[in-house]
Structures are given as C-alpha cells and as structure tokens.
Image (cartoon, rainbow over all chains, first blue to last red; front, side):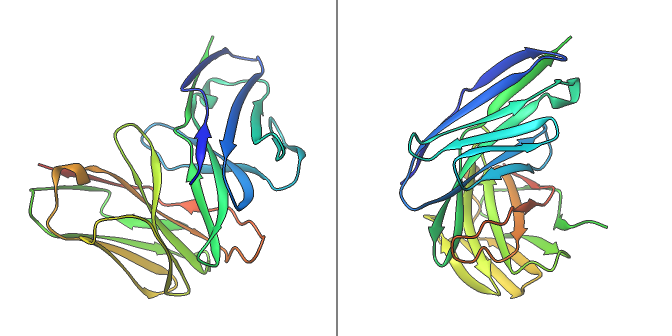
Length: 112
Length: 116
C-alpha cells in the first residue's frame, strides 16, 4: 500500500512564498503529481515529477527526491486566489496502467 | 466546450434507492476513472477503464457497478444506496498512461450525492 503525508493546513501572506511538503512510502513508484482544488470544485493539475529535481511552471515549482520519498510544491508571489487545497498524489503501476493515490490535501489560506 | 462532464451535478435520494451518474469526455482520452471524495475531502480511486476494459477495481462494495459503453463514456450505477455513500463523486480521464509514462488526469465537476 501507499502512505502519503502532507500538512493539514498552512497560512501565508499575499506576495510571499510558501512551500508545501509531501512525504510518501510506496512500492512501484511511477511519479508524483500535484493538484489544486478550490472549495466546491474539481481538482486541477498543477505539475508532476518523475525524476529527481525541480520542475518549474510559472509561479509554481515542484521538487522530487525519490530516494527520500519527498516532494514539495513551491508557490511564489502568492495571490488571494491561491487559497485552496493542494493535493499530493503518488502514481503507482496497477493493472497495466497508472493508479493515483492522493494525500489528504493541504488547505492553504492566503491572507492580506 | 466542457472537457469532462458529469450528470447530474447534485443528487439527493433515499436509502435503498438505485441511482446512476453519467460521465463523458471529449478529450479523445483512452482511460477514464471514478473517484470518491468523502466529507473529510479525501479523494480515493474506485475504478479505472482503458478502452472500455476495467483495469483498476479498488475495494469497493459490489453495489457499485461501472459501465463503459465506449471510451468516451464511463457511467457509475449504485444499487441499494446507503448513508455512507454520501460523497462527491468525480469522474476523470487521461491519455493512456503506457508503461512508465505519466499523463495527467482531467477531472469532471463532480456529482454531490446525498443519501437521506
């Protein structure tokens, strides 16, 4: 099975930088995804990492260390609209495809 | 142009009833999924189909039966609804993952099911 941990809640200030950590234990690791979910809406894809290192996409970056079972999502120049839940998800091989197992999500609140 | 659509958006029904949720995607994807998100916001995979074939079947009560008439549609039928089935059900789709490949999943807007 998989075990995925991420903080339940975080608070940050508009314009600042915030790092959301995710640690995981799994077998058959095929990559790690980050999703954003606003209240009452569907999760939307942010980024994924397959190899160790940093992937940058605009204000969002994601880092992966496979040997440490660790990832983080970095959000820069925070905006009020970034207040949402951020879901870490581990992909494992299953049934000839990839299965995503999600963490419980980190609720980020951006304040003025 | 909705990529992944679900109907209905809200569903309120009584215990013991049978209900269906429909999902359609117009992204040309080969793989579709059903997820359940409970009141604690925990999102958990239920089923996955690739080209109309079941490839992932998590430990879900057999009251839940998915059906994929073609690769653009994946419906979920639930028999004998229970209070614990109340949740938001999300459909998603992705391109075929392929061995070692990763393709992001696109989620539908969700169906909020309330069983009374």
